[in-house]
Image 1 (spheres, rainbow, N blue to C red):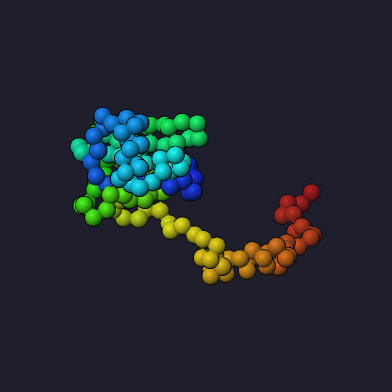
Image 2 (cartoon, one colour):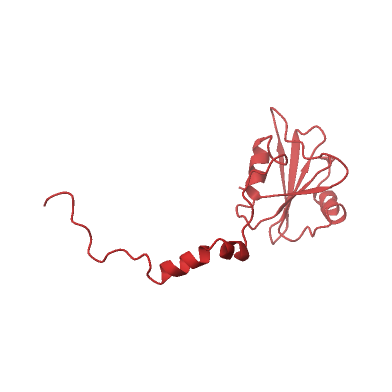
Length: 150
């Protein structure tokens, strides 16, 4: 799977793209249209006007990678809705669903919100972890008697 962790950011270009573009053409689009750094390690998704082809541009630390997919049946989800926004941020899971042909990607949120330390402390998760680490939920030292006689 491309970008298998939650920390990988995926930016989808929300306008149709000429799929004849290669490394340099898509690199230029990331810089100029998405206002992102193509060498950041993020993933950049581009879709053809007919929605049968998609490409993902990625920097892996040693060079640019270009992944391409052509659907034999069906269409990719339509990510473009108008001129107001040229990019849409997805999760790696949403990218995988998109590349499998899911129609929900870009229309409804299919991944949970990202959590931050502040969110965790507001939900008292830190207090529960601290309580457990302090021995608040220790198991008894003597194991229970076996249900099966010896």
